[in-house]
Each structure stands twice: as C-alpha cells, then as structure tokens.
Amino acid sequence: MDRLPTQPTKAAALRALLNSSELEFLMEAHNGISARIVEEAGFKGIWASGLTLSAQFGVRDNNEASWTQVVDMLEFMSDASRVPILVDGDTGYGDFNNMRRLVQKLEQRGIAGVCIEDKLFPKSNSFINGHRQPLADVAEFQGKIRAGKDSQKDPAFVIVARVEALIAGWGLDEALRRAEAYHQAGADAILIHSKKSSADEILAFSREWAGRSPLVIVPTKYYSTPTDVFRAAGIRIVIWANHTLRAAVLAMQELTREIHATQTLVNVEDRIAPVNEIFRLQSAEELLAAERQYATVKRNLSALVLAASRGEDEGLGMLTEDRPKAMLPVAGRPLLQRLVDEFKRQSVNNITVVAGYKAQAIDMAGIEIVHNRSHAESGELVSLACARDAIGEDTVVSYGDLLFRSYILRDLLESRAEVAVVVDSSLAPVARRCDLAYCSAPDDRSMFHQEVRLLRVNARPGPDAANGRWIGMLRVQGAGRRWLLRALDALGERPDFPQLGLPDLLNHLIDSGHPVQVLYVNGHWLDVNNPDDLRRAVDFAHGISSAGER
Ligand code: SPV
Ligand code: MG
Figure 1 (cartoon, rainbow, N blue to C red):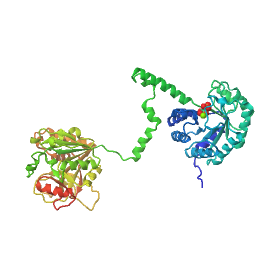
Figure 2: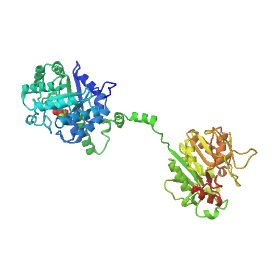
Figure 3: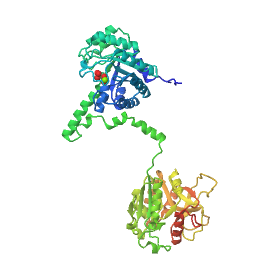
Figure 4: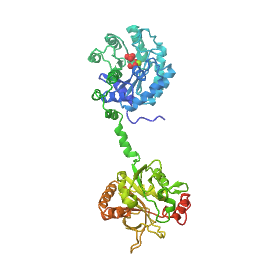
C-alpha cells in the first residue's frame, strides 16, 4: 500500500503555483548551489533548464548529457532546496516507455514536475535553427503524456506539455491544435514557446487559448515585454530560463581574465563572495551542530615520556653502557618502543620523549625528542620542565620504563578528572624504594567506579599502611594542566629543584588544594629497575603472567 504523504509534497507546491490566482515565477538553476541561491532570493519554484544543465556540464543542449546524469544533478538540486523543481525533460528522452521511467525516477528524487516538448530525440535548443526542427507526431506525443500521467505516484506531480509549433514556424493554428490535443491527453499545463523578440504571438495564443489550462511562458527572447503584460494576459507562470548561469559565466570570465592578467587576488577579493558565504550556502553550520550532537569528540592527546636516565643503580649498568634504560630491548623491542606503540594504539599521537643519557640511541619514528642536557645532575622535574611546551591540553606523563596492559592507559584516558594517577593496590613486596601512595580510601574492588583521591606519594613507608603504589603514570587535562604548570614553576624556584621528582610535583598539587584522582589497578604492569625486572618484562611482553608481575 502506498503511504500517504504526511505533509504537502513539492509536487503539491508546484501545483499550487499552477492554480495560483497571481502570476507566478520559476527561476532557473543548474546545480545544488544555484538551486539554493534561487530559493533564498525568494522564488517559489525552480526551473531546471536543459540548456543550463548541459552547459554547466560543458556539453551542448542536444541530449549529450545522458538523462541519468541530469537526474543525478537534479537530486543535488532537490536536496539543496525546499521549493519545487520543474524539470526541463526535453522530449522525454525517448518514447512513452522512457517517459514512464523518467517520471518514476524524477518522483523518487523529489522533483515536482516535468515539462516535455513536442520535438524528436535528440532535440536541439529551440533558439538554434528552431524552424528546421521536426515536430513530434501529435498522437505519439499524446501517448507520451498519458504514459507519464499514468505512471506518476503522487497525484500532484505536474506534467507540462510544451508546444514548439511557433518555434518551428507552423503558425498559431497548429500551435492551438497541438495544445488542445495535449490538454486532452492530460497535460496539467501548456508551455507555449516563442523565439520572437516581441510577445505578440504568445499573447495571441493566450487570447485564443482562453484559460483552458494554465499557460507557462519563457520570455528569454521577448524579455523587454513588461511583466504586467503577461499578468494582464492571464499567463500563469513565467520562467526566467537561463539567467543564473549567464550571470555566473560573465562573472567567471571577467574574474579569470583579470586574475590571469594581474597575477594577484588583491583586486578581486572584495568583489567576490567570501569563502564564508560558500560555507553558509553549503550549510556548514548544520554539520558542526550535528558533530556536537553525534560525533565522538576527537581529543588532542599528548604524552610526555621521561627517558633521560641511564638506570645503573640496581645492576642495569652493564646493559646501559650505550643506551638509556628506556631503550633496553624486551623480547626484541625497546621498552620505549612498546610504550610509544601503546600510546598510538590509544590515539595518543603527540608523543614527546625527554632524552638525556645517550640520547642519540633513541632512534624512533613518530616521536619528538627534547633534551635534558643536565640529566647527569638533575631529576625528573628538570626533565619535565625541559618539555614544558609539550604539555598539551590533555597530556599523559609517564616514566620511560613502564610496561602495562593496554586497558590501564585506556581507563586513564577515560577519566574526567583534571589530574589522575594510576595506583596499583596489589602491594607486592618490593625491596627497593618505590612510590607509595596514600589515598582517601583503599581499593574496594567490589565497586566499579570509586571516587578516591590521592593524599600523598612517599618514597619511604610512613606510620600508616599505604594503599598502593603509584605506577609512574599521570594525566592532566584542562585546568589540571594549568595547575601542573604552575606547580612546576613554583617548585622551579626552590634550590632543591634539580633533585625533585614527579612525586614531589603530585604532593605539591595536593598541598595546593587540587584534587588528584586515583585510578586503582591490580597488577598488570611493571617497571624495569634491575635485571630481574627485565626477565619478568620478557614474560610480560609474551603475555605470560609471572608471579613477579605487578
Ligand atoms: C531550457 O531552458 O533549456 C529551455 C528553454 O528549454 S529554451 O532554452 O528557451 O528553449
Ligand atoms: Mg531546454
């Protein structure tokens, strides 16, 4: 069952123009943007001209563009405008059967009506040797009209029959005879065409026609006739048939000649539509609004990796003679490469590595390198300060010797907190110094989302039991980034700045009253501080969860 249209169709709007008590106008358009411009100018309907559609394709008005190419363009025009489009359907692109298919396809693309002319396919433009053009057999043309009317789905779809008898020099009687025959066949209106420079024969036709059905005219040649004359003659629709294209052609010719001659844009910029006007005609605003509604926001994520240290304290010295610790290979791939790959996997693409010891050994694509030249006598915060400019709106700061399951970084990136840190609540006994985290609540693993704040990070155990270990990864975004930069500046004033590390920065943030959110994890990561860690790292990289994996 056909669905009933819920609101007036474009065809109904065109039919309303045909039934109007006023003189109505259709303005020519030939592509999406001109259709939009015509509508914005206030026209209630559009003439999709065969002449200008073929011209904008750069071909002749002789059915050189295929009808499907025309229909494709009509779809753009229909999408770009809300007013009805009457299409110049030439001769219907063949016989009655082609006409049926044309009507079907036009309706599917939201076209309101079609005008067919009683010439033979392939037709020529009426103003080129019009008098030599053969006319269609009347009965055959009637069949085409009937076939079109019988195949339309929307009863409001309009079929206009165009009489070319005056163009071909056959005289008023023949024009009237044909018009009556087409009217009898079911045409909704008659387009009576003339190439004379005066409107006399059109007006004579109109008098004799005497309102049998609406009359449509195209005063391209008799343009000097005052429009009130058409009004007084009872014409229903005037088509301004090719004027947007002709205006555009002249403007383009003048402009391109001038730019070619002057080799500068300076003289033309103020005389052409601003680029913003093009965006407006394309409804660029609508897309921006839709993006806000539907698209996932693409964040500009950065990572800053501290990789300046050699890592000689705990027996790695032998292995790091020619490279920093972060470049130690784990199962064939340097630690840093693994880290960078993890970042890229989570769409963190602006990666800056602070290099120091054996910086030249960091040879890796897709990263920026910043040097901490005083790495031998300075600590993490000096490295961070060296990369101050790389701390973007949304930045993860990480040690360079971390290995972790990808969900840890993913979850950290999902946090909305201004500052967030990853804390491992499985306090595997570690003999060495580590960053103990004291938090506002212990890890309650039965809760999915816990709001926990970091209270302190200490290298040495205090009187209370720590809640976990900070893994060496933090994230700042928005205000959190500003807090971090301010903390870095404040700590930079202190004489012991060269000795300070990231935990000092976190503690400073906390002391300044800024909340630092804790993201608890339970193992699934490790850092590399000694040869044992390196062995565990290989198992970790192979996905083997060893007892030593934190
Ligand atoms: C057109 O615009 O393509 C027409 C009108 O058919 S005319 O060019 O005047 O024949
Ligand atoms: Mg035409």
